Image (tube, rainbow over all chains, first blue to last red):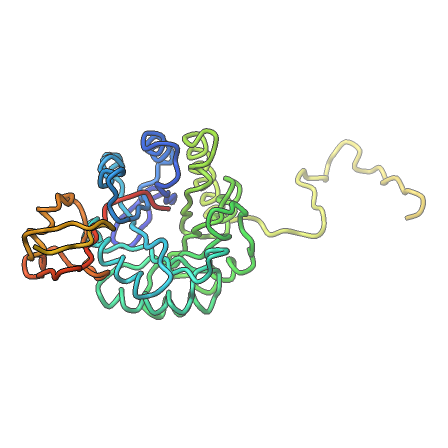
Amino acid sequence: MSWQLADVILNSRFLIGSSIYPSPYIMSQAIKASSAEVVTVSLRRQSPEYKGGDEFWQHIERLNCHVLPNTAGCYSAKDAINTANMARELFATNWIKLEVLGDEYNLQPDPFALLEATKELISQGFQVFPYATDDLVLAERLVAAGCKIVMPWGAPIGTGRGLMNPYALKTLRARLPDTILIVDAGIGAPSHAASVMEMGFDGVLLNTAVAEASDPSLMASAFRDAIIAGRAGFEAGIMQQRDLAKPSTPVLGTPFWHQTLPIREGR
Amino acid sequence: MLTILFNGEHYQVKSAALKYVLIELDAPALCAVAVNGQFVPKAEHENVMLRDQDTLDAFTPMQGG
């Protein structure tokens, strides 16, 4: 079923990264297998050996996906704002995945700088996709600043640890029912992505789990199917858990209904 | 002649206007430019004049997560 992300209508709820694949060809094949319609990209200072990023960019253009540039590697609001402006010109989009990191060890977003940069970029006409922690108050502040989309982490970037704090994610979903919420980072297995979608999140953004798989295309298709299944489960309405067992087969009229249950000693 | 630090290496250029410096340095067509660390939109390339020892960086697309 289609859904709206910012100003576009999408069929897939899978957003995928373009980094750390063994080759641009394998990247292209994996992205095709994912059925993702949004691909994250970045920008770096030109180097002679990289030939200005031509080959990579040609592969991305052929995929005909929406491009979501990031501000990866920025540790201050000023650098992130500067990078976002360069990305807007380079990729001809006002979308920006805003990353402002605060800690080198776990690459945790700096909530204060993130909010500062978000406010400035929204005033400049950007559609900001803020990469955030799962902190509720931060998410609320980002929404109050004008964000239509918030992207909390499942776990630190590249760890593949899955959902470190399901309670916090469920709380975000419950408290921000009208905000597009996409879990970004930390997803390691298709089951993690399915869990996110079963919680009612709008999408999943990941990179490493696909790019570092032995077979990236197969893993991309596994995530694609997990995201579809998780979303379908959410929309269908997942049953409430119970403490007591309840027979799924009706007991009335069974051949031996009149028999009494054996009583075990010690009961 | 101006000496410019372009993408981390020193070059001597005849022009001062950013637009023509980029042509002299064979900068890629698809790039965003920063002078002394500050982004300069393409529409301003013709008006921005570089000074000796300025830093010029060209940013191109690359993989991102």
